Length: 364
Figure 1 (cartoon, one colour):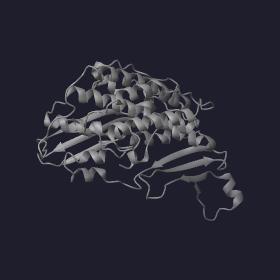
Figure 2: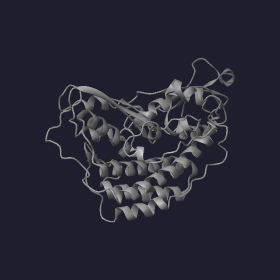
Figure 3: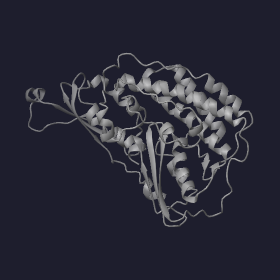
Figure 4: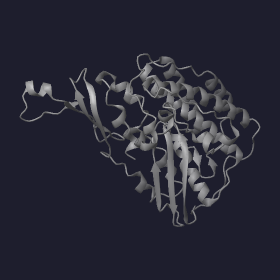
């Protein structure tokens, strides 16, 4: 935190004025950067936020331009990385966009495998936010077990690179489904930390105005979950109930994560059951050079942080003419200007953590 010095204002006069406080921006060698310009009423230790301005773009990662010089097999690697907590979920949107442009049918077993792994990835992402705020060793241990599980299937620990245009990289290792059932059946039931009620309230009326989505929006009662409302993958064959909270505050957002962990664990176990009877190939053989026909398509998926959209435009070449991303974190961060005023400085860390964003997903 850096306190701004106001020239020509002595200590007595400064004590009567609002304090201008910068949080960030972090060193530019990080994967992304966010700066919060806060106006504080009171001192830096116990004051109250009067106004907040999220400032982004300090480290524009340029991924959308990089898409334009990568062929359709290679863009998956770039899409994998903007939200590094949700790497497998990121892959799903971009390969689905290419498959729709190609009119390519994905084998049923690959579809169920993708659905299983994306729900495992959702639990993995949610556990990190909950574990960080509760400092619960059981949550860290559960996350590590799930991390090992996904690494065993895909071969990568953070950037799985398991999805391919037309399916997935390969069949699951022998014995993996038994291991997965053991891990998913043993997920702990997270508890919401005490003392968070009433802090960081997000008015439901602001959700549409700012494009807020995911657990942050559902914790304020927004009835939006693309898995239920616009099914993709195998969600049309699954029972995906709408889970929401009504509090809209910091406590409600963490309660939403806890509820979604339970739901995703149940959906993943159902996928494991279906995989016992769904056989066949897990990918489609593609030509050496993949060229999408001329046209455009927009694909949305329900990522762990919220709605992720890919707008793909093709001119019939082996690389996209344009591939734009609509990332959940970018919108969820903008609403901080409405959420943070009224928050006491000691509560800032918990409120910011409850907004569930990844900085690389902002500076995309």
